[in-house]
Length: 583
Image 1 (cartoon, one colour):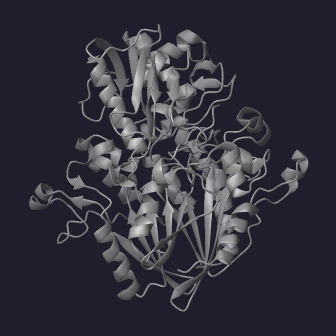
Image 2: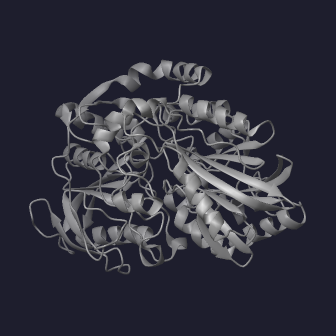
Image 3: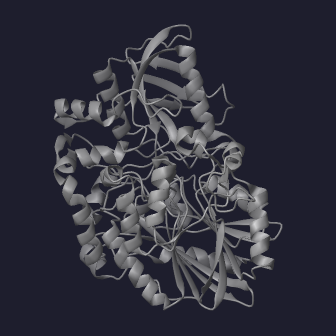
């Protein structure tokens, strides 16, 4: 698809339409911020990385999303004022709140919570009706079934049911796989749409033993693609599941399956869609992460649009990437149910003639809840209501997670592990999911599970030398800041409790982490042994309590919960980087 400078301006203008509102709150409430309007003959709605947040949430966007090498200073690695300036978003309004961390607490009170499946359903139905019968599809980019108390209690089954009510036509996956193959297949059988993943194959041993697969000859576990007739055009959708599943999560959960980016197989599918299946447009529904998708778009030709997820980046307008076949638009649609992407295509004569993209923030106090979804959600929650609503403490300050290096919620988890398990240092994964809690808000068991609900939550305590600790940190840091996007797996830096350190993101592995010091000021010595607590190990077998038990006990003791100290990460070489704001 050729995209001219005029097309680029159209995309930028379309991305800027939603949420530009007068300053008065009353006028904002009256204005129809979802008057996107119809365009073209094909409408694709795209959501991703909801992480089972079926109720509206607050979610603070990062103040640190640093890009290195070729990624420095380009989307998605922009934060705060640099983000607003790049995308032409006025400061201080609804869209500035949706897309950035700026004035988060005050804006959160003013604009309320975002997302929620009942509110999302109202918007989905409106936008599909606007497109007209047979002219739209709803795609989900994965991480739908995991990340909340209700998801954990039902092993994802409740999210499958709610996804069916939303009307999801096609999805791919990531955390869905962490329920293990048996539960995953059970959930998949209940899903009314199609699950696509071109990059998941049987291991050689599993294939030899006749393990179930979509295609025994190729060893593909799932259907890789589908062609749908939409608005009089043939639209091919190819699924790309998270490529690093057995590395980022315990391999035992997907023991028979192998993953990967699989460029060559993808190119064959794109070519077949174009030439054999006579597709007028080819879309990739991806859970690669945006940096990976940008590189992929430059190397695989024939894809019109990549609808991306995994890295939780809310990017208002697509990036345009040149390749051997022309150009590909690369998008990423945020997380936590905060956004719904609207891709409108004018498809005719065997090609995409024009495109318009809008990333619409989902404001729960503007969109009325859909009655059927709200009622079903209440019924699903009812058997667990007492457990989920049990109060543990009150938030003593803004508790948030998202950001490259640290967050107050992660610090509380680390504080709890150190206190309850008797450790000097604590490690907590740099997960990018988990809602934010405003100061004074009650912290319930449901809130805690929305930060910790995984299928391998066991805590551990072990002796570790300073050298081993540095090696772990260097490895995780390389995953985040490797100059080659294909060697990144998403997520943020491991959170550290009880220790400060210096990080130089632009350096090479082995040279990024330095000046590690304990809270008391003593340097961490390479040869010395330290007592280290952690959770969510991908290599150790289940051996301890689930992390929410010691954290809940700690929160109850605090009453008013805030970190004793926010462990500092002093950065080198990021001066002037628009992906970092010192706040």
